[in-house]
Amino acid sequence: MSTSLLASAVVLVTGVIWGVYWVPVRAVAERGLDGAWGTGAITLVASMFLLPFVLADKRALWGRNRIGIVSVMLGGAAFALYSIGFLYGKVALVVLLWFFSPVWSVLIAKYLLRQQVPRLRLVAIATGLVGLFIMLGGDGDIPLPGDLGEWMAFVGGLVWAFATAGMRNKSDVRPLPSAFLFAIGAALTSLVAAPVLEPFPAIAAPDLAVVAGAVLVTAALWWVISIAGLMWAAVRLDPARVGILLMTEVVFGAVTAAVFAGEILSPTEIAGGALVIMCGILEVWPTKSDTGHALPDRPQT
Image 1 (cartoon, rainbow, N blue to C red):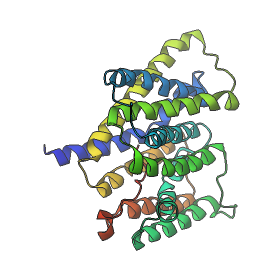
Image 2: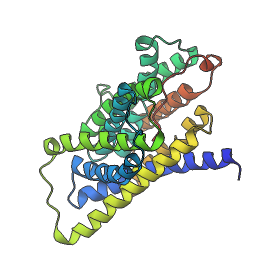
Image 3: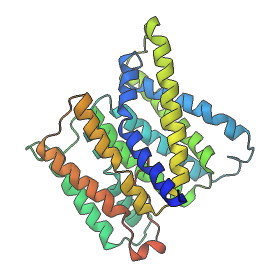
Image 4: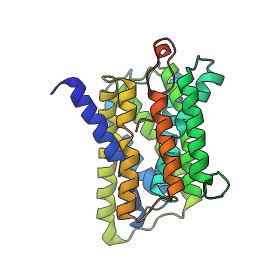
């Protein structure tokens, strides 16, 4: 198997894996780690998995760009909001609102970083905005997120756009230390939010082993192995291919939520969601000016 084909397969599988991430998050919550407590436990364990790699290299973080370090941790904070959002909103809408972040990325590139933005990126903004209005207000409602989960995904996508801008322009941290900072940022955010959202968890004794196992597996598979695999694959593929392959997350999230949780989207939510997906594809589609003006990446989970 060629390196390109293997990298494509890794990205595709990553999208599928993150498309069902809501399952362990909700399973852990049902066993006692509700609200942000579950995400906090998962990301804290992921940090512990990655800590030895940081300690083994004394220069892993020493002397690195501070804005870059903060940006990576901010990215983790954004992912924490995304993870917690699955407990308070429809899975498909949470995923779609998270994938709205390419609009924020383009606006940041144009107005804050003063970068030249190709016309195709402006088309992406228009497409994403129309999709958002249809998805959230197509049934006559005010086009705003409707519950806490949707707001978390929406704000998380905005935070992610700022984080990726900082990472692209300032971060000089290598992949494994970056993954550690990412997990730490998510853990801190979750543990700060946890007591605000839900009371301190009380786990029944028979559930302790199940919860501990679920936390360990989720931390290892999603926050360590899949992120590390994506970091390896992303640098070996065209960004457009990476972005499009990761769209499997939206599909698997919507399908699995419909089958296993009975969460069915309305026709307007489906139509608006399709435009949001198209926005993501347009945002990563290569243009002639991309070689001279790098734009912040779309969310890569």
